[in-house]
Length: 179
Image (cartoon, rainbow, N blue to C red):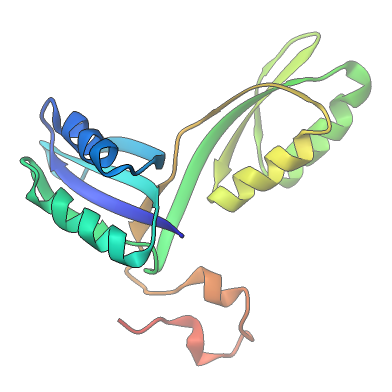
């Protein structure tokens, strides 16, 4: 199972190296990684996606928490969150295919960020499912390059779980997840 971890760290050199070293020694693969400044000066937020069962992830979190410069480690896998990812995708777009590609881009609210005689580059922002969906639709055209940021996430203070909203009637009281 994929787990999403949000880690607050002191913004100092070597922190990411120590984290990746811990993962490498334990045989874990980080499938998604995004690092950037957090809400406090001198603190960065690392959002990572790791595959493993609940028990091994709990052990990993305990070991992460012991590292120097680690302030907090949160497993936000089952917590209502807003998740986003950014993708740039370059497509071989002959004039005869451009209108179809632009129609797909419009449906997914993607932006055209570069255009040449043979190529089209799109910027897509959204939850990871949206990123995968547009990529699968664009596979039928020749994808030249893809660059993705990795998932970033923040916990929803409203506790509204949008995953539950997909499967519940509109007037259900199950919208809010108890904590």
